[in-house]
View 1 (cartoon, rainbow, N blue to C red):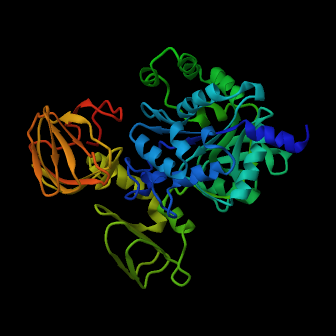
View 2 (cartoon, one colour):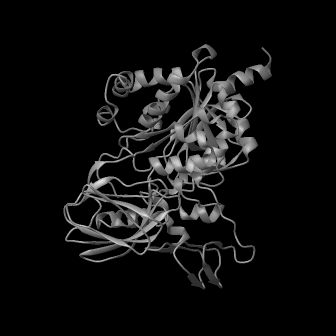
Length: 484
């Protein structure tokens, strides 16, 4: 078998698991728990998840790309991936609850092991976060191919990024002897070192940044799970005999780095020739963004900047006017604004923690929340009322539900809605309205071919989204969520 045939065989065994379940609060207020950074278009027209999928489709068919997300993001992930390739949405898996990266990878491996043709060898599985920015597709594919060749020899392979500065926010990989040009044995890992150690790593050239991407041989990886994580192995081995949701709640919350990679005996690193950034802060967005040639500002949205320099100015919530700023990040949404020096953007996590302590909804959702049936936007709210604009896709419908504490008044402003209240169904046209009494079973549907939009006025002593009792839901949601 010549080299071309060997390379072809390796790619035939290649699979990818895309991790798309993170909450992404470091880019608050743009990134929220219900719409984290991988689902946002931060550096172009397509979201980071969509860019990841397109990158992998350069070498793999859609049926060999498995995406793992959580229950809350499942429908948005499916929708975004379908825009890239219709086949991708058929291979999206949802975790019953968050359990870190190693259980998520095992969930994806279950699908891969069941589908892999063992006559052609074991699956060579790449694990790729969905929220990274990567440039130079050709170099990415070349490095991916080199990592696959090593994984085919039972190496666990990571991608190391040549450091450009002493960064304390990244983990580092210590390189040992060279296995091939650009590939080395791994001597060890260093988790987010202090500044002095980071400077030493960069000047010595002995370490790479840990990208969080890697390629593993599936059989050897599962052997490592059996050896190093027996509780996870017991769950995975019995996955066909036990309800996944109940079993998932019993397994450890552990990352693949701590659980497997730091224990692996045949561990290699391929030094990346492609550009990479995890877009983990607003400073990274400034650094990687398209800067104005004169003032060196990165501007996105409806922004008026006068005499500003070296600043990041983002707006998705109306006109943002900035005057005389230097070295500052200003990020404006419809319901929140962040202003801080670019040198202190790491403190965004302190802002998020404070908001969580105050039980603020600002860390959870934007004023517009996307749901599998459409979206809703909170227009105004007070102590005993809330006003929303609800949009329902053609052919979609909300769950059959009731509320204990609130009544609702719906006014159709676009399209024709099919409204069920109790056992009665009524077509409600534009400029017509309907009342939903408290405790009444009800459902909103769109039987037409254009979106339906309604204004919903809620009134009552308790108006939070967990006041929902579902009786039937076509999307399989079984518990109250921040949704209709």
